[in-house]
Image 1 (spheres, each protein chain N blue to C red):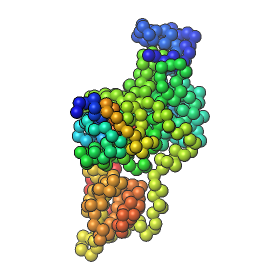
Image 2 (image 1 turned 90 degrees about the vertical axis):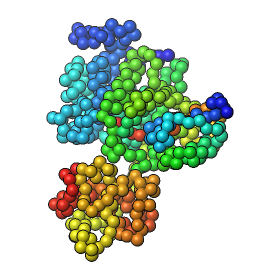
Image 3 (image 1 turned 45 degrees about the horizontal axis):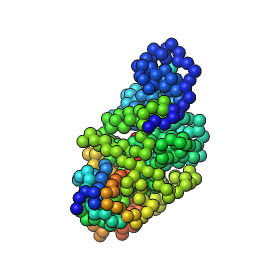
Image 4 (image 1 turned 90 degrees about the horizontal axis):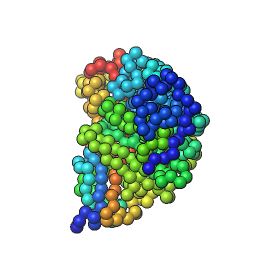
Length: 394
Length: 85
């Protein structure tokens, strides 16, 4: 059962539009009227990354008249394996500007609005307000809960998708679909009521992600957006589609509104819930400089010092570059406790990661577990010129 | 016991990897007990389920603190959260 079209049709299509969208115009349920609805639509895409790339390209090609893009990142070389909107010449550029150029190259008939910012409690409502539909392809829980809650407060439908490694999830959330429709209003918190405990769920940067997975999930998301705008087909509302890229299966999960769900609280609370446990500012005595570590490594080599140098990054990072004499115990093992079995409480422990952020988190856990641990200030990045590293720099 | 008298547990993403299978059937009972028996059968799941959403016939069980009764014929979907995009 279709929902009513989200957008009223524009008055007319120009000759250029009739030519460009010819294959839509001959489609029975889209046709000229559907295309005019697309032309009048205002869609906000949050995140111009892996999922945002196919969403933006397909919505632009489909003729969605106004597309907003929210992102505050710059294009990194490691993005190009999956963020097909951006190319090699875009490395180092802002993602929103790169996205606008790509979309305008594809379809100059549409209008792109740039929001070169990171959504937070202070700007979320004003950024989302005025759009007909929001598409969430961000890369972190804080923004996902923020976008969901803002959509609930504004009454907006949300096309949502998330990916990790070989798995994808996508759905349509709309807390208050039009009265009288056959759909129950559900939103993100009916599936995942609270943000996960910070630090317990690895990011794509740590766990990796199969590039083409973005295309599979992102194109489903674009499809849902087009359907909602034009009011055709059955929306993915009340169903969550999962995708396993390794077996190519798309099992569906039923989603009902939780009758006991808590009302949406202040947006400010989300940042607090999603913040990493205040890695109690590392005390000066609990950090070691790269220069000092170089000295201690040399002393250990001579048998005059003893400590366990533990790298808490991931295997692929360790393979790329490492401090000779360090061994790998990825950070996740400290969060689930499994790492402690491989450590000797009686031996001094020096933790390190790439920049010092992850090792500072692990330091808090290790000290709480009774280890006399310290960590390398500034991580491997601080070692360049101080310690002869194995492999190339990050 | 026939399938209709049992509970179907479906595992997704990391939960499926930890269980090593797509789904199993278990006896009905309070969700807490169902989860305990899953941990006994698939020890690796114990690391994953604390972060997962349990949807019992589409309804999130998170607020019910494991007290929710999972009846015969129900389906429980074990869904890990992830935020990649």
